[in-house]
Length: 155
Image (cartoon, rainbow, N blue to C red; front, side, top):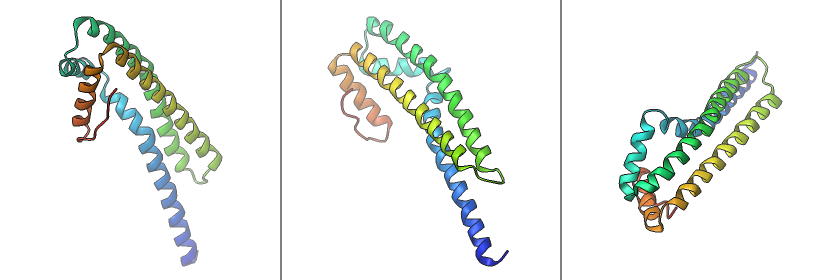
């Protein structure tokens, strides 16, 4: 193998590695967002948000089941995203790169991310219907502080 073939081979491998890492970040971002809000921290996270917006007991009683239902819907999506991540790594490390298989996996990941995004927007709307405009503004301000001071606007 001459020097140009070796360089081409290295560049192709680097391109594949970059693609896998980029895809992993996209797929992993959604999974991380779901994962960090599940389990033991879910109740504590909600209690903190309730205190930030001065939620009434009636509002808490309406919001709790909405959040639990959304998390139950999102958990299987998280697991599917994890499987797609593994699949991308396996496909990207094969001796021969199957572009069609990589594209199919990427498309599955995008479709799943879209499904998760729609479910999160549904949750935002459902919770928003439960809160007053002033509470939604307080929540937006709190989320803005949590995310490095970026302003989210109203919910």
